View 1 (cartoon, rainbow, N blue to C red):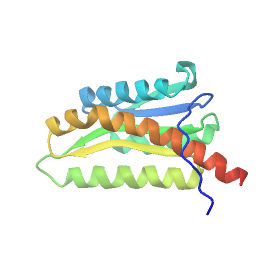
View 2 (cartoon, helix red, strand yellow):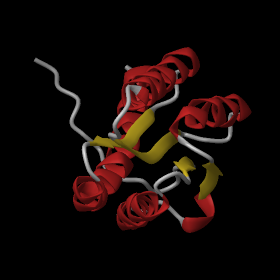
View 3 (cartoon, rainbow, N blue to C red):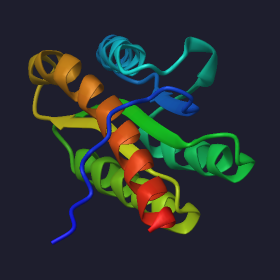
View 4 (cartoon, rainbow, N blue to C red):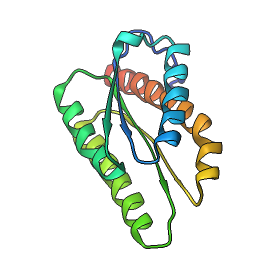
Length: 152
């Protein structure tokens, strides 16, 4: 059996990040962790572009524009959707996730979903570091996997 091993070497990769400004403190925690993980794995600071948008529902459109540019090897979506007292949480959580998936499948570009969906701000703050770093690792791993699959 042939198996493609994961490759987490980010050297030479160009990464676009779209970050929601809503729940700003949480998003900044996600961003800090994501940037640290990218740099740890060899992605150069000059090869990272950050775009901010008002909220999670605006993230997919910005991702779509970045994907269409052809400048990036992978994209990362960052933000936090914290449950409130209304149905709005479900709409924002579901539609932002659907939008990310649509852009990824339409463009063929890996998009790491680092948008938290939590019940409380405390849960989001607690998960921000891990989720931000995970999104960076996913972006690198999926880019390298697709490169290998294209070469097979």
